[in-house]
Image (tube, rainbow, N blue to C red; front, top):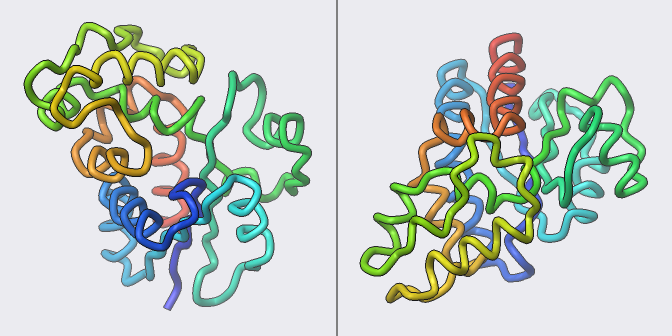
Amino acid sequence: MRGIAIYLEGGGHARGTKQRLRVGMSHFLGQLKERARGKSMLWKIVVCGGRDRAFHDWCKQPSTARYPIRILLVDAEGPVSGSVRAHLERRDSWSIPKAEEENVHLMVQTMETWIAADRSALADYYGQHFLASALPVAEDLEAIPKDRIRTALTRATIPTQKREYHKTRHAPDLLQRIDPDLVRRRCRMCHRLFEVVDGLIRAA
């Protein structure tokens, strides 16, 4: 049985936080997961911790009959110009074969950009005193530096009962709430991920 494996940056070092991120991201990518299962394909998300570990794990696991589709998903950590492969080779000095470019994807500039795209989901999660006005209104969120995104999330959430946004405590829950279609409209690299992986699944 053929399958798809996604090697994901994040989750910290603890097994519990990695498991929570795995569940959250699997829910966010639920459309792809259901399409894969509709073709009787296996589905696996490998939460790797740091970005270098994610790249290392992705590289060391060659395509197999069990998981022929292998996806690397990491933060861009800055503005992206040119191709995904060129960005990662320039920024991280990673050697990525040209043939693998469709298997390499970015959260631009950081996963928090995706989370900030859905104000309604954030407001529902944080509840009373959430400051939606602190979040950026730009349609192209990927043009906003990651530090500004994180500052905006802090300002919007710190008055709430849950207190300020926390990556390992809050992100897994929020990934289960934000609307992937809305994120795709405001984050072109997220749209690329869905489009490319959907195409790979259809062709498998």
